[in-house]
Image: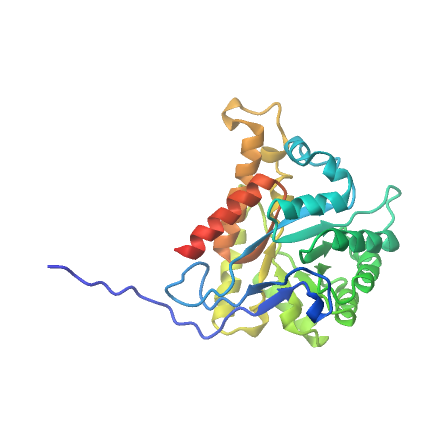
Length: 320
């Protein structure tokens, strides 16, 4: 006799906030389209339990200078466009990127040139129709010196700026609020630290619909199990109604993956590791997909093949 088995379903009281990146001309910007992330009322890809109104999106990382320290497979696949962030952004859009993530760097003397950074951001905005994510060098004082003029020069474009940490959140949040941008709240991988930073940002009256959360993640083989656990607990807290954990999560996958020796080194490694180019793409892809399964709403990648593989995987997971 056939037996009917009822699939047990969790009932959640909360959901992730929706956050919109980019502003079209009708909303005061120049972007060709806006990208909305978040809104999930269930755990990742469990469509039978709740709504997932927006699929996760994939951003391509570019730099404001030629990345001498990037691995050879990345330099070979991108070629000369890496010498010009404008050409690089345009190529990334042609290849199917949904967002551009521009990483700003210090100049040759080690100084943070805010005026130059603002000019580069404006030029990249003119080269692509996609919404833009802008990251500073990752040092609180340098980030402040570069991201404030960037926010002013890109006023109204609703870019996402970061990193916004406990050391500099007041400056970054104020600049973003004044110019209609988003912030990326970044904290060490810990549920309570992420929540605390969101509370501090909220206390400045920053609308939480303009905050992305960077939980600081690791790559495959480098603590990704712990990363997964923390991201999953953040998402469970959000779905259980904790308003200070309901931000969409962004993970900088390419940066983490391509700095590990398995991706970065092509010589002097065991033959069993296989082809360097293939290995690097697989390392980045597996890292990205694992973090999507943990709850990431945006992943940033470096290799065009990874972009293709991760987008294909998202399509399948959203269709299931």
